[in-house]
Image 1 (cartoon, rainbow, N blue to C red):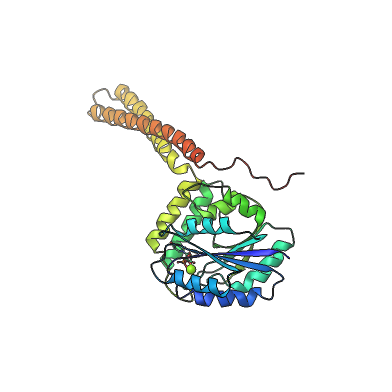
Image 2 (tube, rainbow, N blue to C red):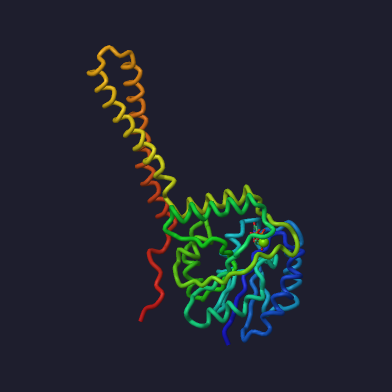
Length: 309
Ligand code: UDP
Ligand code: MG
């Protein structure tokens, strides 16, 4: 019998945990699977840990938890959870039931068909979410998909079931600044997305303010793209180009209209533009090297093998 590991990051979720466990149990008990839970208490300030201890006492064979010394963030919690799992398949779920357990059988069916290494869930709407948040999210996906080689599917949540092979690949990326949405795609493999309608939290409140999401979005861009570093090169190049055009203009004008009063300041503007441009351009070039060093220090694997005989 195959084993399914369920990874659940929890941060201040004392109210959600007692609702989450029975909801998932109800679904998995009908599945032909052995199940293990790996809850990660991400330095909660409430009684999350007590709730997890209670669950572990109830069902010590199957329910396990890792508890952090402080809040390290969801990304770190996911990594710790994935690292602890032993199942043939691993599913990552939020504890607030925004990732409906009802889809587990369908996900499992798709993944065991052998065609896919990963089955993810994709929201088709953003009901119950502030307009500005949805707008910013859409813009984020537009931008990152334009400037990064790693494509990120809009609306895809972290709720996904993966094969052991893919989990090991995700774990082989040991970088400190983790952006899971990007990492799941970076490692490759075949992913199928099942669409579903947005569900609101059962209890508690989200810890993600718009500002926090904004910062998270920028982290994603920095982690998966070197484009911001080349912005200086572009601006520098363009301003140098304008300067050169301006100079030609000034010189021609000097011959056509020798006593124009415009000569002095116009040539000065051109020189300032040119020097500024060259400086920015050089900064951009340095930036490119820093970008390479940055990517190298992540120590990402050079390739990931899917099959070898
Ligand atoms: N979470 C976490 N550490 C954090 C913030 C959140 O482990 O610092 C967990 C949280 O308990 C939940 C999941 O990550 O299980 C998603 O968080 P939330 O529901 O607040 O985010 P949203 O669903 O709004 O994206
Ligand atoms: Mg949530």
